[in-house]
Image (tube, rainbow, N blue to C red; front, top):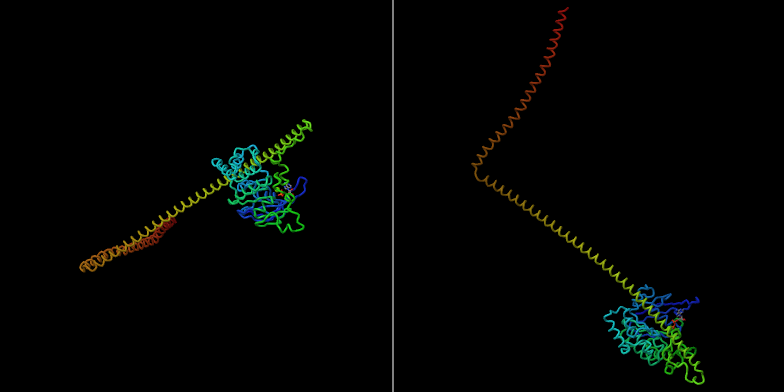
Length: 476
Ligand code: ADP
Ligand code: MG
């Protein structure tokens, strides 16, 4: 779906004056519709078309294709957008130095059709437009209608979902225009959305399609199954028609081009080019050198026109080459983004794998631990059971031996006290003897010490005193 949301477009001319080409355009075009955009020359039709193909960017408002805002997208994406749009122009814009086949194949290459299937695709679209016999012709060897067919074939080569045609029949005679329009209708029946700018009132009236009419950059009519002029408006005394180019033009009488001023001024068609310039009536009366000069002037004019045409074609070629470069850049950017995304994906997968392995290991250890503690528990239980049984067995044994023999018991009773008595006695003996001995010896030593204490001083005193006294006494 194509949506225009309050689109404004102002051009600033070389003399710095502003031209408001679109002054708030809003509409929606559903997928698969066929829509005519009509209006006087200069009303803003081409500008509107260029906002769809991204040749112009709105100053205000937005243009959406399938919910994607194309009026503020990156320039690098423009070629990607144009892959789904087929563009057809009043002046065909074919490359003069290439054959019909090469013109279409070149466009196919630009949109990335694989080399293998390119030739087949070109044959197919040439069949569709009914020009398979002209594959090897050069554009200037074809009529205007044939050239426009080539341009349509070229627009079809990428199987576009949208076809925009700006005055596609502007340079063509009515019959040829009719067949070109029929071709666009076929393309529309094939599923593509087709938008055609035109001021071919006969065709618009006959085809009964949706008509969006523009005047001075504003929509003044948007009607389904409409014609070029609304009957109601024709009855309006103030209504002055839909532009001088359509008023009273007898299409059948004028097979020469009837283009918009913006295109046709720089363009000629074959009809005009083939008109004799130096009429035969001049012969005889006009000197041959004058006739010759006129012929030379005409030849020079023709050469100049051809040079202009070639220059324009070269510009178109250059633009296409730039488009190819931009597409290549977009392709590389996409590849890089895909590579990074893949790397990230692989990293995440690796991490997930590592996490899973760790989790697995943890579970394994947990299980081992659980089994170990289970075994320990079992072993403990078994040990308890075993000791319980042992205790039971011991108790049973003890009971059994107690019940069994009284005699033995008595003997046991006798024996046992003897041992005990003996042991007790030994213990008692040791207990009594030792303290007694100690006490005795302590008492003894105390006595001895006391005796010694008493005796020794006495002895000393006696000895010495006695001796001293004796001596002294003796001396005295
Ligand atoms: P139409 O669809 O009727 O041919 P255009 O969209 O070509 O109308 O032009 C709408 C108005 O914008 C006209 O007044 C035209 O002169 C002006 N215009 C178009 N293109 C340019 C441009 N590149 N620079 C300045 N003015 C322009
Ligand atoms: Mg135009």
